[in-house]
Every structure is written in C-alpha cells, then in structure tokens.
Amino acid sequence: MEIRVQSLKFDADQKLLDFVEKKVSKLGKFDENITGVEVVLSLLEKPENKNVKLMVHVPGGPQVIERNARSFEEAVNDCADAMKEKLTRHKERRTEA
Image 1: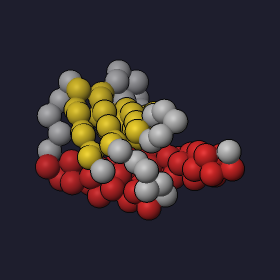
Image 2: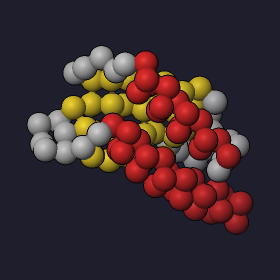
Image 3: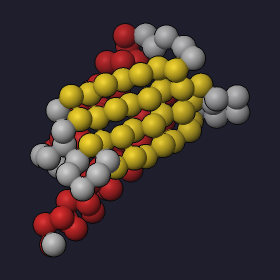
Image 4: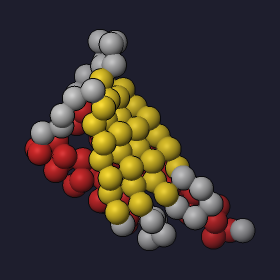
C-alpha cells in the first residue's frame, strides 16, 4: 500500500509526516484491497484552520473523507477513525454482492 502525503501552503515537518504515515498505515487492516492512500494537509483561514483530506483507493472507486480541526493530528485522527468505519461498510457491501 503506497501512502502519498502532500502539504499545501506550508512545509510539513518530519514529525507530522511520521504521525500521518503511522495512522494511515493502520487502515490496511480494514481492507486488504487498498491500492494506495493520498493525504492532503492544508491550511484554511478559519479558527479551525487545519484541513486533512484522506483518499483511499479501493476496488469500486476511491473513498474520501475530509475533516477540519485545530491541529493536524486531531484532523488526521478524525479522518482515520471515520475511514475505518467507511472501509468496513464498503467491504461488507462488496462481499454481499
């Protein structure tokens, strides 16, 4: 599973990149058919100005979740938790068909 991380409008430090990689790599447990993951970190102008977009490529089309938070770590956690549920539901639907 290939993980690509992009940071828009800022340079992400290695600590943040390692955190993202660690969290996102755990998604492989929920669907073994994941071919790739894209994570886009960006800054917004709102008070909760950290935005994370998580796109997981699986058979049947990519699954996308986007979250805003006060910190990138919080947004990545929210995205990863929501994606776990989404992948589980998607996998169940695929196996039923």
